[in-house]
Length: 120
Image (cartoon, rainbow, N blue to C red; front, side, top):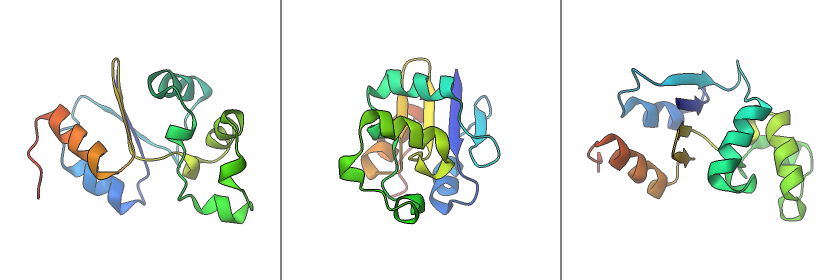
């Protein structure tokens, strides 16, 4: 399995995806095709945490008046399945590893995984 979950309208996602040869990867635009319960379970198996998959920058947090500090793992799971913007992106997932989000260390790990030199 080689899948990338991303958002087409996200410049950061597009910039990260453009660095890699994704010819044999399945690309999933999460607004058009939201993640399934099974896919979320697969991600959870690799991260051991729904919170690790949750984007605390989602505009939905403010719109829904959520207090992120009070959310439980069950809440994170339900929110991730409820709206695509709650997923931290991009998510690169293979049979044995997962890369979640656009933090510098995650992008560096992806570049190492793909054998790509950093642009910096």
